[in-house]
Every structure is written in C-alpha cells, then in structure tokens.
Amino acid sequence: MLNFDHFALFLSNNSDKKLIIQYIISGKYFPETVHKKVIVFSELSLKELIEKEDKFGALEAMQNTNRSIATLSGGEQKKALLKYCLLQKPDYLILDNPFDNLDFKSQENLKVELAQISKEILIIQLINRKADKLSFIETEITVDSNNRIPNSIVEFNLNANIESNHLTISDIIPEPLKPQMIDYEQLVKLKNVTIQYNGRTIIKNINWEIKKGEFWQLMGPNGSGKTTILSMIIGDNPKAFGQNITLFGQLKGSGEAVWDIKKLMGYFTPSMVNLFARNTSLEHMIVSGIFDSIGLYNVPSERHIRLANEWLKVLNLKHLAKKPFYRLTVGQQRLAMIARAMIKHPPLLILDEPIAGLDDANALTICKLINKIAAESNTAILYVSHRNEVDLNPKYIYELTPSEFGSTGKVV
Image: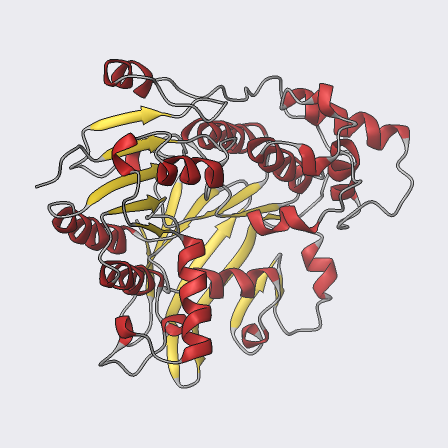
C-alpha cells in the first residue's frame, strides 16, 4: 500500500527541470521521498539507455527480441524504457513529460501501463501541458517561477489553476518589403506518390494539393511518413525525383533550381533555434529571414531594421530587439523564429511541430500567432503535428494512416 498520493507537477518553460528533479530526490519537495530509490523516466534516460545498449549489447529489457532500442518507434522505445525502469525495482518513478513526441495511440497505450504500475509504485509526473496529466493523479501542484511549490497540502489546489504569464499578440502583421507575385493557385501537388526505403513502402499513392492562402494541418502517428512528405516538398529528399510532384507550378525534376523553390517557402522547426550564434541579436535574427540565411551576413538597411521591429511590435518583443537571441525564453524564441520565416510573406509557410515541448501558455500564444498569419495574409500554411491543438484553426486536415503496405492519406 502506498503511503502518500501520486503528484502532478506543472512546469513552465522557464522552470529549471534538473533542479526540480534534484529537489524531489533530496526530499526538499516531499520529505517522504528521502532515502527512497528513484528512477527518472525521461528523454535523457532513453538516450542513456540507447547508449548503454550500444556499449554493452542487448539489455535485459530487450531480451527475447531481435531488435535494438534505437530501431524501435517512439512508442516502443518508451515501453522498453518503462520495462527497464521497473526492473530496477524503484520505490517511485519521476515521469518527465512522458508523452512528448508520441502519437495518440502510443500515448493511450502508455497511459494504460502507467495506471497499472501506479497501484504499486509512487508516481510523480512532471508536465508542461495540463491535457497530459494522468487520470489517476488527483493532487496537482504548480511550480512557481522560482522553482518552489506550496508549503502545505491546503495550498496545492489553490496553486494548481494558476497559469503562467504568456506573451500577447497585437497589431496587424506588417507587409513585406516586396510582395511575392505568383500567378498560379496551386502551390503543391502530389499525385500518386509512393516512396520506399530498403524495400519497405513508407507512403503509398498519396494525392494531395495545397492552394494559395489555404491553412492545412498534416497529421499522422509516429512513423506514418509526415517527415518523408515534408522532405519532398522542401527539396531535401532525392526520392522525390521521378515522382509526380509539382511545386509552385513546376514539375519536380524538370530542371528547377532547388534554391529558387526554397525562396518561395518559409520554414521553421524547433531544432533550428540552435543554429543561431550566441551574439546574434533578436532584431538581426528576424532580419536574416529576408536573406534566407542562418545568421546575418549582409549589412541591414534602415528598411530591414524597421520591418523587423514592426514584427517585434506585433509580438510585443520590441523592447528586446537588441538582446541576444539565445538569452530569450523558449516561447519568445519560437515566436521570433516564426516571424523570421514569415517576414517575406512567402507563398508557403511550413511549421514542423512548432509547439513541441512548450507549456500551455506558450502553446496558446504560438497558436494565436499562426491563426493571425492565416487570417491576415495570403500565405498558405502547412502545420505539421500529430497533436490536435484546440486553439489552432486549420481549415483543412490531411491525415496519414499507416499500414503494412505503406501509409495512405485523406482529407478529414
């Protein structure tokens, strides 16, 4: 019988997660956990497990299989990690955003396993999104900006509903310095596209069109082919050649210049944040979108600076214009990167998991910005995520459904 409740700790993107985990283990948050055996279930733990398997060979958690953890899907990897954690016979588990990067089905399967485990092992869940809270956890605690929790059980529920301060979006988005003139309605067309890797079909007979000004979400579970389709549109997948793919009125493989195609797209994925040098100011980072460069290698004109600051005004970040980009909060960085991708009003804006890892407040702000761009520009938006955001308003959804014969797609 467990002698105290399971807990859900709500964190903001400004929380010091490593410090919070240390506080839990040391008993600073919960005296009951002192001298107990703790195992942390996290992306870092998974990475360490994969490295351990690579160094020592098959681990006990993977016995009776012919596969390594690194080759498994996201859901299967989390299942293997959970099995490994339980083999250590912990007194309690710290679950660090256990559902990050998992599709709906994988999340549901993991929830069933965790609910069963919770009958025997104490669980403390660290999460950024309230929708991810495990249903069997009743006690919710919000960690404040100084990584503190309430001093008594009486205060827990009072603090549980406090939302983080979040950025606001204001004003009309600014016009580009030079309008993008396109004389065709159809930006992307995939006709009967089938892609195979090592004899395995990834996507099969995909037929899909994106037209000027449309707002699409591309959905599908992990491994369904979302990344494959994106790479063919962006131009980074050689398997796109020979397929019936038309981009901006030109059949792929008919002599088009890849960089000319890329100039007609704005693109953002969270991993891009790490590409910007430490001395790049927020203002210059946004200006770099005009030149399609990672970093600013051209001397910006007054018009360039003025346009960047108009975007910063929309984002309510103008007071941070000269601040180094790397010193901004995660939410501020994401907003700025989307503004950078949009500064030229490209015919197509591709946003690949732009909300992944954000807390509720920052996710809401990003959704507001994307909805605003859709409403106030002629740019078509392709938003890619397996997660349905209730605050996001795509007009169309293209969903991939995997099978042993390859993923098929349809408009839903």
